[in-house]
Length: 226
Ligand code: CA
Image (cartoon, rainbow, N blue to C red; front, side, top):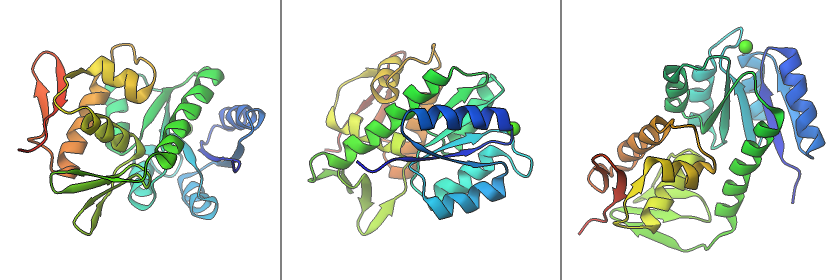
């Protein structure tokens, strides 16, 4: 497999260097940018497989940059944040981030999360190429694409995985914790709001407000249209 490229956009040099060091040890190619403008340019240039993005940059906010990048590319994004308030995490996820890491972080944990996300993206890319029909949507696991008619619907990798998981298990009720474990691969110490945000985005983007149902006090289920 081709060596995977990770772009680190982080203005705190020691943190960026630590991440780059860890990534190189693991066999990745690491690129660094210290500002949003440089990061965006480098992103266009190297087309990274994954982005580590700091929350607070000198020239822009990480969430603004996250929004800009997800509009243009389908790259998984992990936000790095020094803040631990849930509101900040929520904003990052709303801006299209797939995951977030609170500083100070454990380098090993960062690497595990990166591998997890990349593994899921790759797995989706090699699985069965048939299109799955879901109401007026068509979904391709191979191409990680959702189409309504001729129009592609823009989903982040994580949103796509969640949608596919729900659709592959129709009428089954999942707790938020179980979805966190299945889609995010590890437990977020009770931070189930992450699931709620992704569900809201899926309903809105895919027009599945009726199909993706809230089961009060339990979680969610996908009910195919009759
Ligand atoms: Ca910073």
